[in-house]
Image (cartoon, rainbow, N blue to C red):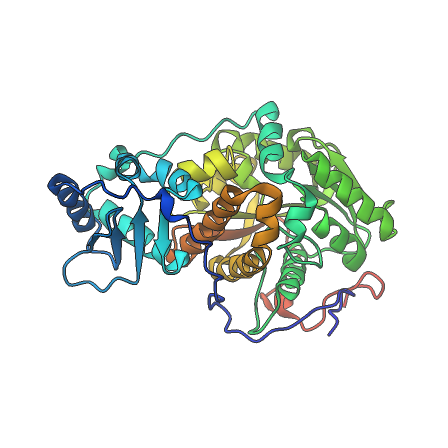
Length: 444
């Protein structure tokens, strides 16, 4: 079938938020085990104490000598396989820091579904924190790196300049969206969900043909091109990734949109001009809490008197640092804000919040689709980047699924406007209209 945006869309049959089947992880050679080393009585006691602190979670701990330890009265849905004494001690020292490193190198592994193990581990840790708050200090997360302009460029290069080919293997083929999709109907494909997400954002912004839009952090340009082509606006889009900007400019030229969409390789702090709408999708996470007021000043500076805006970002219910391994190896400098912290962007400039939506479960589904495609191409990725790279990204994607499934992470969309803007819909029905406004047809 074809979406009204002109993209080809494939449907598949699945329940809205079920996890797709996971291709089993590649086995780690048996040589990684420290066979012959006996497990001491103290080590058994430490592990049983940890399982007790975690509230008797439904997973076992399998040790290098073949011994398996689990909490009494529990049925293990999975097992954490620890291949050496050194790995055990590092893991006990700080799992936030070392679990990712050890898994990536194959010094630990998981028997069973990695996502299920991580979900159970996250729930157990959250329960343990409620009973024993000292764990926050004992297993401390590292402080995120600073978000200066120079540091931001380095952080973006670390994650986004891995090559367009890598991301094309598992992102959608419609618009290369590396952010949460929107699945309002059962059976939607990843492509359909990403197109639905872009419509959802454009409707919240109430875009009109001829308006000017600025996008902070445009990725590969999919949303900017979609807004121009489908809603008849002009877009100025900023991004620090040289590779993504080059890719986006080529797509704009190929689609005949180069005169309506301008892609600028620069920091959000250098946005210039005045616009009817501001949009930022998946970028606030990279700004850093210390720079939220500066980010808000940019919005205030560039938004016209009747302007509207939308921020779409990963967030939390309670302030907490991002996992140390993720911040070090995957997303340097990242931080997921609470809703209260997002208000630090808007409140100093008296910007009015119009709508807040949490799409957490939509991100579970998006990540599941990404993971299925990633696993389909895992052998190719391993040939190009190495097996440790495959294991790192598998852990990152599975950990993200677990984080959103358990509510450890949220996905916020916050729509806002200048104060006193009274040209507002009387209900939210406009978000769910059967047919979106089209640039070539005018507003319906």
